[in-house]
Amino acid sequence: MSLNIEKQMKAQLSDEILNALELCSQTADENNFKIYLIGGIVRDLLLKKKSVDIDVTVEGDAIEFCHLLAEKKYCKILQVQSALKTVKAVFKGKTEIDFASTRQEFYPHRGHLPVVVKIGCSLQEDVYRRDFTINSLAMSLNKKNYGEVIDYVGGIKDIKNKKIRVLHDNSFNEDPSRILRALKFAARFDFCRDKHTKMLQEKYINTQLHEDISWARIKSELKQCFSLNSAKVYDMFLVNENYKLIYGQKPEIKGLEIKNLIDKYNPYNVWLVYLGTVLNNKKIIEQFCFTRSEKKIFTDIEFLMNNRLSVMNTNYDIYKFFEKRTTESILVYYLLTQRKEALKYLENLSLVRVELNGDEIQELGIKNGKEIGEILEEILKKKLSGSIVKKGDEIEFVKSKIK
Ligand code: ATP
Image 1 (cartoon, rainbow, N blue to C red):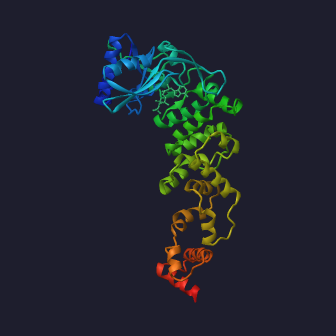
Image 2: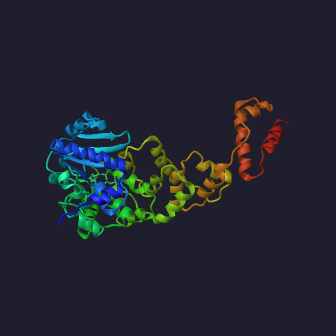
Image 3: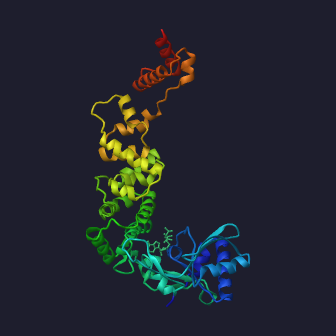
């Protein structure tokens, strides 16, 4: 018997979204298009979870379909990708929907981005390019069977049994980033990989790794996984040997330790603290095309690890060692070395500031720029050792220098 989730949909989606979908539905029926909600949103409706993106697939040409909607002023087209025939449109200035034409893909080189072999294929052909059964469900938006779930691959059963299952044995070869997608969904929904999928994944990780793959996809999935700031994701990443995908190392660190540090010190790039503990392969770091600020985190980690702190240190030595290093890299350094000085720096020393500025020192009578710099440094040293505390003490110190 077919499953119909119209009721679920009405209960879960906002009125704006439902209205927008209603306009799509009417337009599709009037113009003989078959259209479906597809992928994540159908999965999330079945799981009774909130969905972020609304994806609609058009059996045929999504651009043509969206022009019909736009002509009736139902929506505004925001973006068109002609090669893939996808469209982003906004309804009532608010509800964004991504429309895709059904397409068939082919991976000529394993791990690289796929090439599209056919646009406007059947829904069934479109479904087979997808990653997991749970993400391969469609829900009809046509009046005739509105709300009916179309399941070519056993996705409904897998959602019930909390299983993540690939659609075919070549799935991880085609796109190894699916290994990380499996991790993300497992953590998010508390699902586990089915036995065969687990075996295929282990086989890929242990025998079929390849450096020549789409690192952009791997990076994007790592970012999504580790941005969840989930101890479980990190522990699973290590236990499932996912770090091998990025030619990383397995540290003796528990996810909870990282999570606690992140919650306490609030680094901007949460995901890079997790990633920084496993990724130290320079060649792969290059492949990731990090932004400048992301790259700095990795050069800082390298600096800290290669120039370890000596055993006995003054506060000033510690300050100088960590000064100018990103919080993320200092946390990674702590996690890898357990040197408490790293936390002392973040908690206390990094907050120490010289209150006097160059102009004020000049007004006190020291004119030479180099000398001013040296005095500022001496004050800093004294503040870090605790022999100077207040601004008044700083002024006294400068005066004593002049004498
Ligand atoms: P999320 O809730 O994280 O957005 P999602 O399932 O909607 O989950 P997207 O990354 O937005 O994930 O992808 C939309 C759909 O595209 C997926 O549901 C899946 O069917 C398909 N898809 C995405 N990435 C891949 C991939 N690497 N290989 C195959 N299919 C994919």
